[in-house]
Length: 170
Image 1 (cartoon, rainbow, N blue to C red):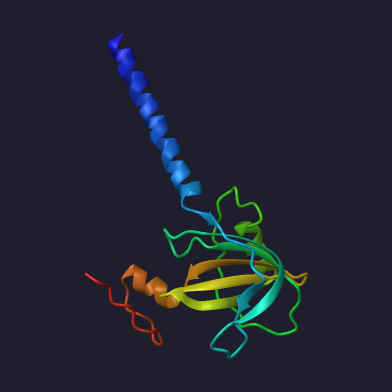
Image 2 (cartoon, helix red, strand yellow; image 1 turned 135 degrees about the vertical axis):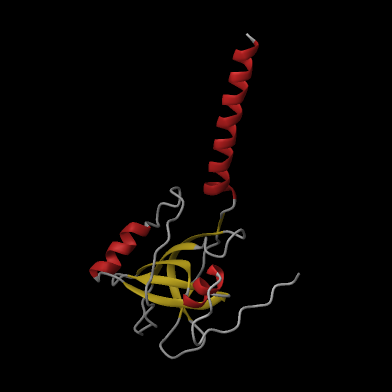
């Protein structure tokens, strides 16, 4: 009888730990973002982005990581070009954030049905905000490591042209 109680306790503890880890990864650290009237996009040659008006916005972010930002929006119209983003890699969003599908965005980019553009460079050292724009005005955004951030966070020498990384307080 005592062995059965110990086994039940161990199984219950394992299930509780598993559910806790899943919840913390998928739900706990994300915050829904408030509605926005505009979304920043970088025109070619500009040093600061311009705010492009939106009709719809849905977004999530987290203080626990600078690359957890995801957004879905509809632009009201732009007649201007934006800075193309080299090597965009849509990052997966939690399953409950259903408007953002990284695989579909990647497929649209590969097929040429959408264009990846720079929203904001270096929002945090080595991290850019990237947007994918469709001709019908739909837009999606995420944050991803740029070439300087990838080298820095992997401990490799920085590529030419990268700003020095911030010094860490000890």
